[in-house]
Length: 358
Image (cartoon, rainbow, N blue to C red):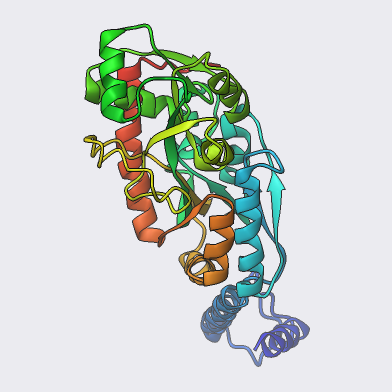
């Protein structure tokens, strides 16, 4: 169709007709027919562009897709991102590469995707820290964690576990709460940083149990674990993977998992709900999203590919080896999940007295 239109335009120009200024030099083209001729060509050309656009959407993806990971290479989030990227490459028939953009509490990577072209070729893997906490607590985050993204699907969940040094007398959440009440304002809990999920879990525990603990933020799970192992900290909610070996060897005692169900890697450890605190369930979840205004048909194609990946037994086994579990929600459910999580966590930020920092 494009060749025919180009040939016809060439013929018209050769006859002296200019589509732009509507002049006619050849008597074969009557003045009263000029407007009609121009309109017909315009309609045909528009139809051609629409068909071309549809063909482009149908051919997605036609080049490499970049999955931005806002965490450093080599960590648990990086292993997860690469597992999902490999599966997506096979499902989509094109390369999906992981690009690490750590820094500023995940805000650097998130902002890069928020500003990217909304064509489906730049994606983001992140969770509550990126979409909710960083925009709320960093003054110059330069993006809106909800409005600037088009949710595609959630992929995985990493349970958090409440751990204590083995020399502490409390062997259950009930005994821990009793000790905290008897030593009000003296017992300490570690987190992996201000605004981190372990801090939120510590805040919720205090609210629900009526206790008062002292928050000690660290720069990650490793330094927090060092002080826990040395007995300098009384308790902490941490991701399961980095403390799994410590629990298995008795160097740390696991009291409960802050998850909706028992963790696959810790089947003998009860949930906080089983210990009497049903609303203390806050896991580290990960989802994949695209820049806002990405075409819906592109989102649908990516969603279908991710669904295929995370529901496969091979992916489930890989995630389990990393201490993660499959956690799948499609685009619409992921969007609703984001809204629900934002409401809950922003309320906790207010209660905890956290303030934005530059």
